[in-house]
Length: 95
View 1 (cartoon, helix red, strand yellow):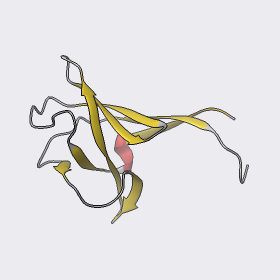
View 2 (cartoon, helix red, strand yellow):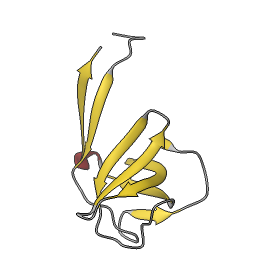
View 3 (cartoon, helix red, strand yellow):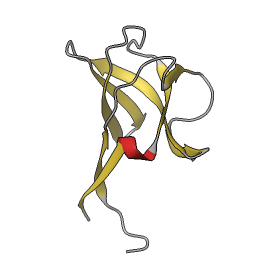
View 4 (tube, one colour):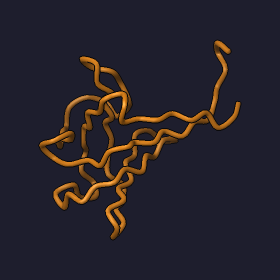
């Protein structure tokens, strides 16, 4: 429905790695956008678990969990992640 607001879960089906699909950046705003056929997610790493789960703050009310074994992606780093559409799954959670 046009104008309706929904909660959704966004699953990233790939891990992030500097130089492959992620860069550290200071440019632009946090958020999710499309550029040249890729989904671009920009945010700040809020925390990391010992098992490689990385928590990326994209907006005040948006926290993404993404796997990463890249130790150069430290807490407080602002990263830009470029993903193909096939690496994302969006699931509506309610309305």
